[in-house]
Length: 291
Image (cartoon, rainbow, N blue to C red):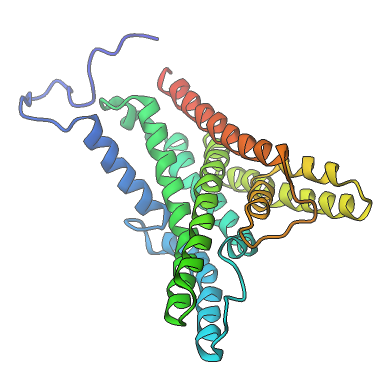
């Protein structure tokens, strides 16, 4: 790779010798911009429709549950925090599949990535900043309904300690799952420059594959081959989430729950997938920067 002797500031016109923002400031600005763009903020009105529609559909059931608990004075929430994420995983998957190309495909397809990387911002920092924006957007998307449930449970007079413990378990699972989902969808979007291909690829990874895994687990449970079902759960981010939620007694039940060493394997695979996909994403952007 030829050595870069200048940056986009140096165009041969009148020189500017004043202070310039450093890498940390540029990365922070890029992170905030990416987070806003994931929800269509700062973009056209049409770009806001899908993310906020999905966010509304994901949050509405939580508001309904809170209303029911408050009016009928139930002793507990009819659905757990981790279970709520499992029930709305299709909406979360659609949000990730639709918005990951916004952060990764557009810059590559329109070659505006060259403008970013011409700045004094290393390609790995750019890739990690975009990945962090997508992960944060997914956390906002998934945490908002849980916070609605939590506030509603407290307003209904449910036990604070019990609700807080259950919420913290769900948040820990979400931190792990969103990094995995952001890594998978970000990598697919950085490779598939066409937005349609990126969306389809992400839906296959987040919707089709988990559906197949659930079917295999159901069949394995019915046939008494639980080890097969537990092993199949390693193949998708959502089965990893559900399996760990079941093992950690977070209010989720799966056909073939992992136990013992399988719980460690589920956790290790989730961390490994998040690390490998993020590293591959960084390598992809570094390859683009070297051209």
